[in-house]
Amino acid sequence: MAERTDFIRDIVAADLREGRHRTVVTRFPPEPNGHLHIGHAKAICLNFGIAAEFGGRCHLRFDDTNPVREEQAYIDAIEADVRWLGFDWGEHLHHASDYFEQLYRWAVHLISAGKAYVDDLSADEIRAHRGTLTEPGRNSPWRDRPMEENLDLFRRMRAGEFENGARVLRARIDMASPNINLRDPVLYRIVHAAHPRTGDAWCIYPTYDFAHGQSDAIEGITHSLCTLEFEAHRPLYDWLLDNLPVPSRPRQIEFARLNLTYTVLSKRALLRLVTDGHVRGWDDPRMPTISGLRRRGFPAQAIRDFATMVGVAKADSLVEVEMLEHAVRDVLNRTASRRFAVLDPLRVVIDNWPDGKVEEVEVPNNPEDPAAGTRTVAFSGELVIERDDFMEEPEAKFFRLAPGREVRLRSAYFITCRDVVKDAVGAIVELRCTYDPSTRGGDAPDGRRPRATLHWLSAEQALPAEVRLYDHLFSRPDPGADGDWLADLNPASETVLRGAMVEPSLRDVPVGETVQFERLGYFTPDPDGTPAGLVFNRTLTLKDTWAKVRARG
Ligand code: ATP
Ligand code: MG
Image 1 (cartoon, rainbow, N blue to C red):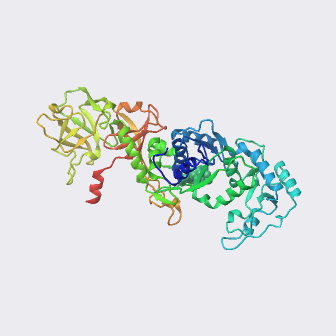
Image 2 (image 1 turned 90 degrees about the vertical axis):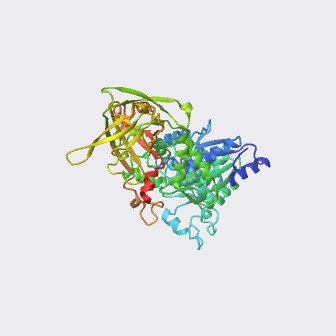
Image 3 (image 1 turned 135 degrees about the horizontal axis):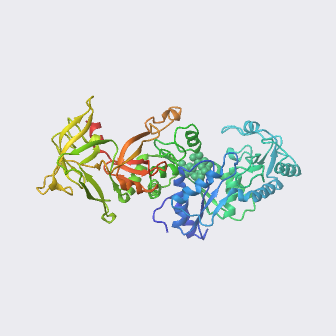
């Protein structure tokens, strides 16, 4: 039984309790015309989650009824994304196209019952006849065509005798219905296009409305969960089930779609970002696609946690992207290994360090989790630290390295800055420091405590790396609210650093694993990297108190 609850889980629980169903069967029904995004993840977690909690099952069904926009590559990517999110459809991988023959026979059934007809009006004419929210529609001149003629024309539509758009099959319901979806909706259109699965077998394809509910009924779906824009389609969903000899009776329930600040969630918009070259592809780490979030280093667990936090409701809402980021930090803080990396290196020479000596210092992998163990990192007389961890003339509240000041190098030694070396134009190129040999491991025998602890690397052992810093893809929380959403793209959403240095052990972190670069944030290897040219993406920053203090002050 489900622990958490919401209006959908309440309905499912009542249906089981009152014996309307013995097993709950849900489905996730993507159209393979793009990659899945975080909104789909909400629907996936809901459908697979409910099935798991109530001991039922969830099908993955491709709603592949429009061959013009659909591709096998999308089908493969969707399967990979659902699996990566942690869900398993078992035997139940289905396609609306598996039912094309059955759907065709049901269309013939409707025609034979006088409930569907072939219309010769063009798409524009059909639109013009449809009426508006305040005016009823007008009947097509073909609405009362004899049944035999309808059957003959529909058969010939299938046989390929007519051009795209020449005719459609429409349900014969009510052109005066207050619900526009019941004004003789189109059930089949002519599309001469090869289908990724059925090839050239068909040149007529069912509409979403005609395919969806009937596919649900064929698969024995008990609860067909979809987003609110389908609410007005529910009377049609029910009308078709009422008028066809379907083997089961699914129930459609609508929930609010996920909207996120600083994000667009529409496959059409995401496709545009890709085709116009605003991003590196569908899996760009700034994209809200599941593949983008994965490449960014977001763990699947965090996305599932986020879906739980968001919950399901009947009213549309806008969720702060910071909530998703919080879920990610929450998982990574517990699980990510700590590593050293220096994004903008400043050379530090330790004048009193024995010439040529290299020492291995032991560093904990995760201070939150002693079971994660320790590793060793090379320490020597030539180090690098983060350039912004030094200020020649420190501002108030800047406690890190400055001339004459002592700081702790994490797990290693205390160092004191003795001199600043500059180049001909006055830029700082090196710090001369001394270390206190009695502070090995990072503690002083006399108990003195520097106010700052810095990360560091031994210059000779560290590896060069490219690091890509990411920020929101859009510069306002509501892209497009003032017009063109593309104009709201954040020009600084990606910053590429080419001179970073990282701990040698980072060469062994596989793509798909996210680590914490101490004090900098969470980072993950990008698939663009090679052993000779490491590339890391910044998943998220840690909370940077210094940036906040400075912004306020
Ligand atoms: P988009 O509107 O982003 O182009 P779509 O609705 O056309 O997406 P489908 O492939 O038809 O994409 O969606 C599959 C399922 O995912 C549907 O049941 C749909 O309701 C659900 N879904 C799509 N977008 C969201 C969202 N933002 N939040 C929750 N569920 C969503
Ligand atoms: Mg859709």
